[in-house]
Length: 272
Image (cartoon, rainbow, N blue to C red; front, side):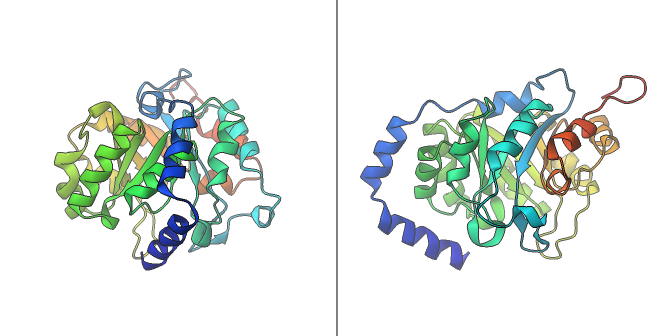
């Protein structure tokens, strides 16, 4: 997190809080990310938060054509919207994921779906920055924040009218943050379980299922990483999990939109 702290400090020097506050005031109201994924729109029984992701620290550039300034996140987002996505997640961390904060607004300019800013958010200033950039929702990673920091950021996110996807990986952090999911307002908070072990980078979809008994409300639970097939969606759905975040699998395909359509394709008897 030291690298991210240096990055945030540099951003603060370039943009005053007064300027940032004025930018937030000029933004259109945030789109309702929470409702978009909890209500399972478009007739699907599983809501997919489809992610725009160019690279990862473990895999490098996901496809060769994603490297360079010619990458167009808006094209991917448009394809996701056309093929059943309920919302968009956009990586904005530049050093490790090849993202850019400007991608959020570029995506919002061409789709009607709400957009989540996915980054390492460790400072309340970044929440103002996210809303100024057009984000409708933000990711907060429990492993990166103390409980007091988390509470402060949950309150500020709600004040800025952004949904929070509160992500955990291990049991200890789930138990630590569980009492605060939905604080200060339940319709602004989702709980995410990351199936990727950030220490080993291994992905196991069963991780969500193993932790499910400790989750108070599976209706607002998001399973992150590891979803590749419609059978994966069915397996989660049978356990009561009906929201997923899918990124790398879709972005690895030549046509991410077609890959999403295939993922959401009904089974032989119409079962989603």
